[in-house]
Length: 123
Image (cartoon, rainbow, N blue to C red; front, side):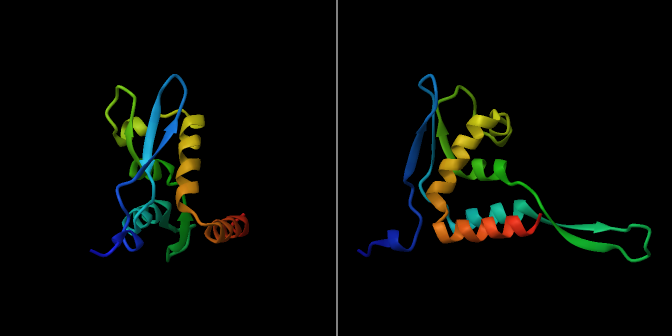
């Protein structure tokens, strides 16, 4: 049988140890569908009238952190259901620690540089 891991994302996870023996497990790699959900959550079209007859539209960029965490966290040690609502209640330092590991697992250096360039030009 062919080694399909060259072509398809597997079920492998990476454990992130937190404090007090707590941990989360995240996907080792995101699929193309995961990337699309994050992109959909981070870009939207905004219409503004500004007193003009025809509304003006612009693209608005927003954070998709909760969506990214929701897609990537597979299991955790907390006595809470693993839901979007509970993920969104994570304190910022822990969410950032998990998100940082998600990015390390999924963003290649050249992609990271391109993203950073785009963010700098939007300011």
